Image (tube, rainbow, N blue to C red; front, side):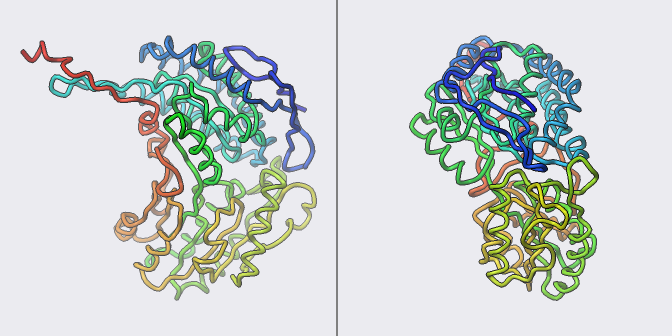
Length: 477
């Protein structure tokens, strides 16, 4: 039973100003596994003012100082690695292997990448006699979700530290354990007081207070498009920078020249990983109409081979994060059935033998058209929609026919796949299940957000651009 009722503000663990508690539920057991305090606008203000107080000194630190600080954070993170992975499994249900190999591992990836980018990042350049300099934007507010908790903390905190910003983090109240451990890592690494602050709470209280706070210069939000719109509205009166990584309904176009078995099986695995709780999951599989029957058989076999079970075992997927999410997913599966899609595998209810825990059957629908609810809405569960297409042009049109534009996938002969990739309106396109790239910019078109995270592109949103005209005038003369 974890007891995390303090906030990290100004370099110290402090009690909430207005006491309020929330039980944290283990999604695999439905039992209370911890308690946190729920913050208020007063707690958010205290954290923001601590960050504001720390900004003048931290913004003037040298590149070498910040490289050393990130290296210290990396060292402390690696010391706590097993504990962080275990916390992720407990708070959001990621299988132990996934927590170890991906969920916790990506924190190391962002830290190592940020260190290397910072070593050579060009903060200034002389253009004629004008010096163009990139300076830290100021105090940043981070509102992060529960599905990849350390990833979404690290991909914001690391570039903020690297560029000389100070910050307040509000992690998801549903999965807050790993964020508290991250704060302990920051403290142990010697991050100066006030540079990093953590306040737990929900969106309407702490999230709204941070995004509207006049002393916050930039808010970075990862979550649903609906919530992202509220963040932008709250931020508008103070004209602060708003960075958003929002929802997705990513197409996976299987071209006629793809190896059908490899492409369909790989697509199923990508959707099901993390119990379907990834914003960039390839949840719309587009298949040549003439190959749909064969694709259904392959998909059925792959879905039925996806084991579901306790995250403490060797199952491929664990539970979804909460009862609320479970109910939402069940409602959308029912909509797929009611609207006439063909249920290939899975369906309503829990998998057999898993009566306790928020487990969802790996579900595949076929013969879906792009106007159906399951083709339009982000389900955020282990549910795939298979859509037929008659021509490459139609496949591209269907792929782009969504309010989202976070990611897209193409399977086929490489040159052909590259050609199709250029036509897809998404921030990231993956060809033939290519391995991830920590330097690849991550973010979306349309209602999937704005700005980019990961690698050197992550630095851009944390910097203001200043032109000092006449800087080189004497040298020019």
